Length: 50
Image (cartoon, rainbow, N blue to C red; front, side):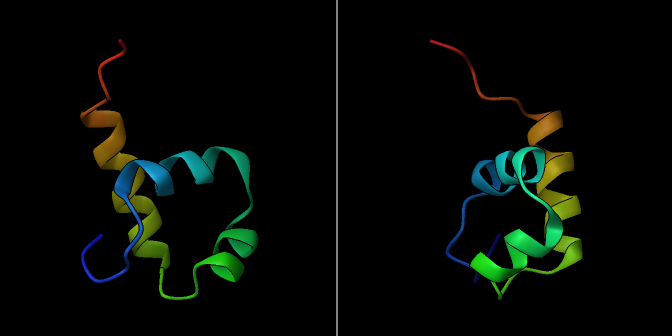
């Protein structure tokens, strides 16, 4: 997420564990659009397991 200093996979992981309100409290620069886009990207491009 350009300009937020938070990684896409970090955001996507947070959406699985925390409420939207909790995420916004920790990262006020994020928007609902950021959360949706990060989740879509992470699902389409999963990290390879080692």
